[in-house]
Amino acid sequence: MEQKVVLITGGSSGIGKSIGIFLKSKGFIVYGTTRSKAKYPNFDAFNLLELDVKKEDTIALAITELLKREGKIDVLVNNAGVGITGPIEETPDVEISKAFDTNFHGPIRMMKAVLPQMRLQKAGLIINITSIAGYMGLPYRGIYSASKGALELVTEAMRMETKDFGVHITNLAPGDFATNIASGRYHSPVLTNSAYQKPYGATLEAINNDVDSGGDPIQVAHKVFKIIKTPKPKVHYKVGDFMQKFSLLLKKILPDKVYEKLLLNHYKL
Image 1 (cartoon, rainbow, N blue to C red):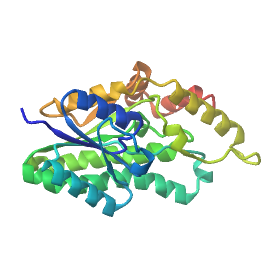
Image 2: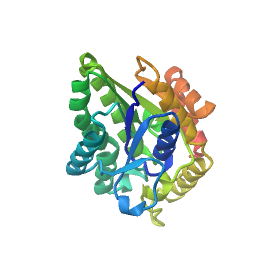
Image 3: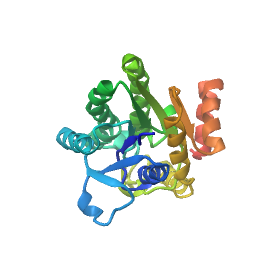
């Protein structure tokens, strides 16, 4: 059987790297992307291309290079993303725009770049890595939740728009996993003269603890592999611990104010 070619954005570390290593071990031809190959001179886990999802010229160059080498692209995993925390009132507009540029506009740019080739092939799979946080407005993570929730909805629309091309598009929403996302996250500073000082400071600490104690990202890799092997993928997939996935069920069945109270209690607000 011919090997499938997989492209993973944000593949040099964290969840993306775990996905790439696992898929390579399963016989896939794997390409990951990074904004700067110079930062990873000894990277040998799989092929690495320089690409910034915020810059269309780098996307075009990377896709051209990939097709030159392999002649096709079977799977795109839109994994590149950034974290952002803070009271929305105190989060600078420029930082909100940056987060959406990476988490929302970036995956759309990538899908636009690969769809012509997938349409030509009459086959292809796009997996958008979103977040369980994208299903709810989390306090002090509202912008992150919104950017991931927006990608969930765009995926729903694009699935229907591309159904006649032999292309499948789906969402995979992870919960908290132990990655380096916190180190690259923008967080509004905890200001001593702010009305949000105490609740935001405590919530930020809780968020960091959740990430640090998160699960092994290999769980996400296993889920991606399972999706690739599924002939007709569902619209939405989730991966995370029981309580994270159970929280989504609660959101469906509980009155809004009751669910809001659960979140407030969880974050001790």
